[in-house]
Amino acid sequence: MTIKQKFIFNCEGAWSDGSEKLLCIDTGSWRVERPVLDKEKCNYCGLCALYCPPQCLKDMGDHFSPDLDFCKGCGICAHECPRKAITMVAEGEFNDTGSKG
Amino acid sequence: MTLAQKGKVRVITGNAAAAYGAMLCRPDVATSYPITPMSEVAEQLSAFRANGLVDTEMVEVEGENSAMNVVLGASMAGGRVFTATSSWGLSFMYDAVEHASGYRAPIVMVIANRESPGILAVSGGQQDIISVRDTGWIQVIVEDGQEILDTVIMAFRLAEDYDIQLPVMVNYDGFYLSYMATAVEIPEQEDVDRFLSVLKQQPERQKLMPGKAIGCGTHGIELGFVELRYRQCLAMERATTKLDEIDRDFGEYFGRSYGGQIEEYRTDDAEIIIVASGGAAGTTRVVVDSKREEGIKVGLVKLRLFRPFPRQRLAEVLKGRKAIGVIDRSVGFGWNSGPTWMEIRALTPEIGIVPVLSYIDGLANLDITIPHIERVVDEVNDATQGKPYQEVTWIPLEE
Image (cartoon, rainbow over all chains, first blue to last red; front, side, top):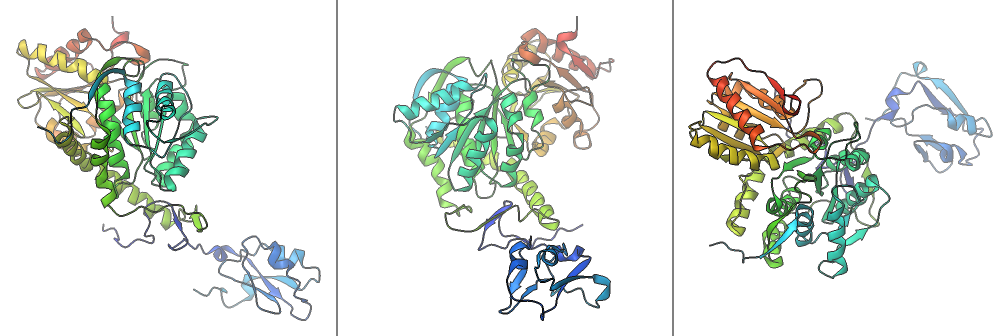
């Protein structure tokens, strides 16, 4: 067995400052439902982004869009939206994983 | 002729020796919650601070868990830190102890060894060393007051070494060494400064900076965890030979050295070896001398480094002997033997199949006496002649 000599981190300890690589974990990989926005209903109030636990809703200028690499599909955005503009749709309905990487 | 000047010799307790050692290394932050038999370390260090001998920031804490977390934070901020505890205190800081090694914080902690909680003993023993055996700390065990002071200085060199970056525990027998006053040479400040100045030539380790974002707990997931654990183990591995180097350097500089990972005493032509650590090693040395006069070719291996375990050096010195006796001041639950005996037994592929006898003695402040060790030597010697022997002996329980 050979052990790789190239490591993910440059730091020795389990902590580092922002100039170092921090471990990004793909929390989107275990999502079973995906938030889908009806732009007609959205008035860009931002409550969804405020409530999002992993803070993965990105400001697109006129609406908020989930980063599907990190969205766990918890549905809190859909639950909190006052205009019911977000629907949770089963992952099986999509051909892609939503992931960029 | 050594490089360092001759220091003043004072008659001080082991606890005071630990405090002197720490003071001479000028820690930035120190804290300690009092516990028998270690409290004097913190008292002495506070007195040094009050008398203006050192400008260490002494933090008053409400318990050992806070003590370890305070020095952990200060260490991550780049400070040199020192703390001290014993037994129950060590148990109470257990999670922070593991944090410290995972964060690779070069903390130096002295431990006046005492029986660990369980049977409510306020008495000496090395069970607390065993209770934190697998926390990723480097563990050194010392024998006398002078060695306490010198090893605290060496511990800072070892912990803060850029290749190591691991916390170090310096262990000494509580109630015995902690309170026993002996003549100890206290090195001059400038010599200790110079001995530690090697560290300043090394690259700087990472530190917490105000206003700079820090990720803690963002690294230990999945492969990141495995990688950091592996690197912890690599650093541990490096600490074995690093301690030998530092000990040699210390010897050249101050004229005192202790053998690094292990001390070998009259082992050259020895047929049997007694393995002991801490104060018991001193008594064993006396017995080795008297038994040699009786014609028994016995030698002593004093175990100084307990974690990382000095596998290679032990294998070299134990190989080809006829029998080995191992004295433990603690127990290995589940094996009904001494913990060091288990580890020596694990070296069998390297040292060969010979009788290895485990002796449990000195629990709860009971003395490990000269007659006890004479008996160990005699039994180990008998084992070389094919006589039947008992694998594990609880010396105080024997009639």
